[in-house]
Image 1 (cartoon, one colour):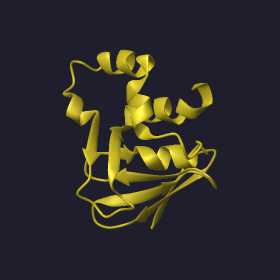
Image 2 (cartoon, rainbow, N blue to C red):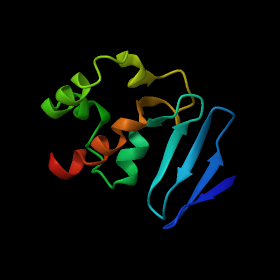
Image 3 (spheres, rainbow, N blue to C red):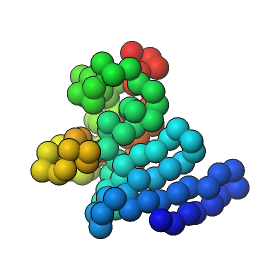
Image 4 (cartoon, one colour):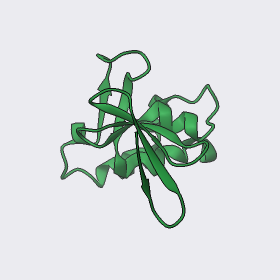
Length: 112
């Protein structure tokens, strides 16, 4: 476990295994991150933001605003912006997104 600090809060990194870690930003915001490619598990983002249990990562992909956002990244290979990882242990599997998309997912349950 390691801690990095900025002027407002300590960020705690806790290894899950060699490839994944928990990042704890504050008491409620704990995300699962892939160390090798800096991608974040969508379900951990929704859970940290207290999204209702009926909100799923797939809903985010169905939104017009998501299509517009992803079109901004057309110059980047889309599989690098998100990836469905089902070959992992149950607590790690799911859709992982690039760090640039984390905020957009975090507000999913607020506006929809």
